Image (cartoon, rainbow, N blue to C red):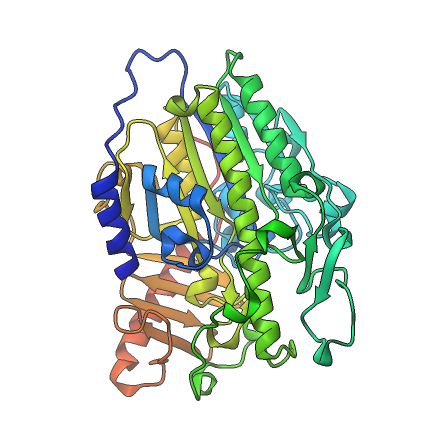
Amino acid sequence: MTQYTLLVLSLAVGTTIKPSVAESKQKPDNVLLVISDDLTATALGCYGNRVCRTPNIDRLASEGTLFSRAYCQATICGPSRASMLFGYYPYATKATGYTSGRKEVGSDKDSWPQHLRKNGYHTTRISKVFHMGVPTDIGSGKDGADDPASWNETFNSPGPESKAPGTGETLQNNPGRLKKGAAGGNRFSVVEADGDDLVHSDGKTAAKAVELIHQYRNTDKPFFLAVGFVRPHVPLVAPRRYFEPYPAEKMMLPPKISGDWDDIPMNPGNRRTSENLQMDVEQQKRLVRAYYASVSFIDDMTGKVLKALDESGQRKNTIVIFTSDHGYHLGEHDLWSKVSIHEESARVPLILSVPGKPPSICESLVELLDLYPTISSLCGLNVPANIQGVDISPMLQDPEHRVRNAVLCSGKGRLYRERRWALLDYGKTGELYDMQKDPLQYTNLYHDPVHSDRVAILKQKLKVKLAEIQRIEPGKD
Ligand SMILES: [Ca+2]
């Protein structure tokens, strides 16, 4: 927990507590949701990364509450976003594919933005909030699996993705680097792009957000503005200047532990490895470099959006949320990408900056599902009784506050993660980690006789949890 201790110290020394919002305010707080795509918390400075440059997100964290144990409910885009936006575990909705979740949830339920919309908010989506295919829907500028009932207005941000002019390369399945240029599609391709931010989807998204934020200053309604960035989802395409701080030869890879794979069961979630992607160490370092460049790009775009909020005078009455739909592996256990339910893939960055609340770090277990009830509560709205998250707003005042003993995440398997123990359940086999002694998950205790009772207890708790949440409760209130 050293990185958190450092951040606590810097918070204690460097910041002051913001004054409370006046009780006589005319309208409820606005809500700005910034959601990145495939962004692992481990890439952010405020979560302890000392190489990747994320000054804007770090500043937001220093002004708000950083949740150090926040988890997604699915380690792939569509189901995670459907879960977060409709307030149900994927086990309840069966929304597990290319979907917004609307079809599975039904027309009588309100999404989170729709709930705000029905209560007087002007709701806006820019780019990928519900699921969109990257790069397919981004290249064509399509809506993806959107939910029109959620929004007053929507804007897409088409971008060239791997067709962007610049220096391209294909990192995966390219031994000997015989293929030149950036291959298209959903794969580890990189473009150090010529031109400025506005060439790209995320540059356009930030510019539209800035324009709207200034425009909303003069409106009577509060706004819910959802800003979706598509980086660092592959292809890793960003303006050239974002690559410059990251020479490939200086990139560090996670330690490669001899025999690390011997106690990890083979399952479909572990399918993207250095071995089957045929990436040598240099290619792995070039991937980390391009990922960091993509993260710095969306950090810069986040900074532009926050600056507009400041300059338009609306920061003091706007709730800001920064998060991602799931995490990502950058070579831990020689794994890459998502789908795995190991820590780096299941944990997400989550920062809430709420007017009147002091900066803090909260280590309580929280889920992305909790955002819907939490923001509803903070906006003074009722919390629909049928949704499955929990209001975590008391944590903003009291970081020791707890609402759950475990989080649940699905991928190829089920993660049941308590504060100390993480059970990765694959049915007949699994993994068990002591997250206090082994936070990087190197020693699987699942088959250790010393822990057989613990495995049985955790599996039983998981079974009870799954039984509790497997259906959508009727009604809205
Ligand atoms: Ca994603």
